[in-house]
Amino acid sequence: MATVDWFAAEAVAAPAPSRPRRSRPAAAPRARTHARARRKPRRVTGGILWISAFALLLAGVVAVNVAVLRANVAVNKLDTQQMQLQAENAALASQVSSANASIRIERTARAFGLVPASASDTSYIDLGKK
Image (tube, rainbow, N blue to C red):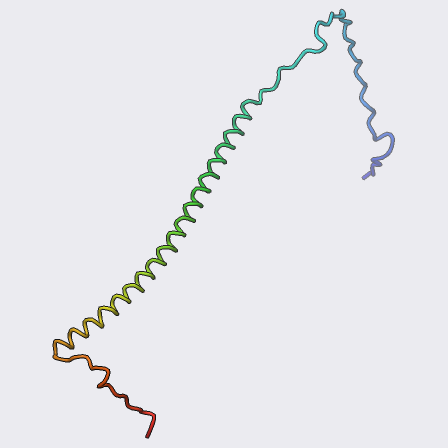
C-alpha cells in the first residue's frame, strides 16, 4: 500500500477559475427631487399601547395591595380594641359581682335573724401569745 503525502503540491487542488464580473449598463443620471427616499416611520404605537396597558394593570394591582394592607391594619387595631374592651368588661363584671355578693350575704344574714355587731361590742384576740 502506498502512502499519500497530503501536503504535497500535486495533491492540493488548483483554485477554481473566477467568474468574470458583469458590468452594469450605465444608467442615465436621474434628477434628484429628494435628497433620499424616506422610509416609512416604524409604527411603535402598538408597543406603546401594550406597555401602557401593562403599566396600568400593574398600578391597579399595587393599589389593590395597598387597600388590602390598610384594611388589615384597621382590622388589627379593631382586634386590639376588642381585646381591651373584653378585659375591661370582665373587670367591671367582677366588681359588680363582688358588690352584689356583700349585699346578698347581708340580706341572707338578716333573714336568719343576725344583725351586724356594734363597734363597742367588738373585741380582738391576740393569737400571737401563748
